[in-house]
Image 1 (cartoon, helix red, strand yellow):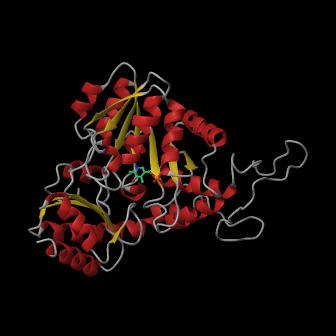
Image 2 (tube, protein in one colour):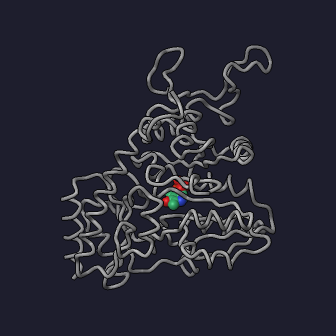
Amino acid sequence: MSGSGGFSTRALHDGQEPDPTTGSVVVPIFATSTFAQDGVGGLRAGYEYARTGNPTRTALETTLASLEGARHARAFASGMAAEDALLRGVLRPGDHVLIPLDAYGGTYRLISTVYADWGVEYTAVDTADPDAVRAAVRPTTRVLWCETPTNPLLGIADIAALGGLAREHDLLLVVDNTFASPYLQTPIALGAHAVVHSTTKYLGGHSDVVGGAVVTDDAELDATLGRMQNGMGAVPSPFDAFLTQRGLKTLAVRMERHSDNAERVADALAAHPAVTAVLYPGRADHPGHEVAAKQMRRFGGMVSARVAGGEEAARAFCAATRVFTLAESLGGVESLVEHPGAMTHASAAGSLLEVPADLVRLSVGLEDVEDLVDDVRQALDALK
Ligand SMILES: *Cc1c(COP(=O)(O)O)cnc(C)c1O
């Protein structure tokens, strides 16, 4: 069966027929660099060389496309490799890109250094405000890049509104769906042209593999991405593809629990006097709450907060948690905490995308929620 059923049924079956030769229920790790041919050019199953294609990777790509409700997906060696392949495929020197004011730091770095050096121009805009986006469009604008929720400020952009604007101005709307995952939000159905993922985060889900993907309904764009996989070679290994696929199987149950736990942690933060603001789209006081409620199934596992006492207090909080591990990255089963200004978003310092120094970001994991809430409270109590 393929392409039918609910989310978890597709996560467990699409692209994952039992192996025809052995009956293996799990897609094997095809640890091979090349494939025997029956006579020159006589490919047995369409595979010739593993940079171009590998069955373990194909299985992952099939499942990813299915979960995003799209026709095509391409897996890459990292989220950044996926972003690079997409941008390299669609941009040319002289083109202009719109990026969110609080884009992921690595996305900002890629566009403001590698692509700027190549002659691509960019403007950072508030993607939560379609009028601001429209005002920034130039005749040379080719890509409207959007992240929702954003990393690390949890800002919400209205994907359907941006999709309309992209069609109006003939732009390619790209949505970085890393924070939501396709369980919570499927941007292509809302008008996005392409979805990018750092599968390192919720899709892999266990902090044990780095990967990325681009998903689209556009066959021509997909073919371009295939040429990028083959021509630039930033593809995941079969083992990486296997680990990511294994993570995808439990995505729905994990996202439900991440959302449950994050709601409770956000409430605990909001109730503490040392917290000056909680940034969580599930809260009614979040400026993007209504849009988030419209386009997301639930609100996910990421919570950011600003603490009284500035950078020093934010750093002290990160050092004081015991269950939340101080580390970059997010989306794994274990809870993590970080200081974006000095860690994940340090590359945006001094730019328009600089994040507040009193900000902490929590990736709320799947530990018992009482332990998570107690940990946040004791770390805040220690701030004084
Ligand atoms: C981590 C991340 C990326 C980059 O992905 P890597 O797998 O680390 O290369 C891109 N976008 C967002 C929102 C991320 O969190």
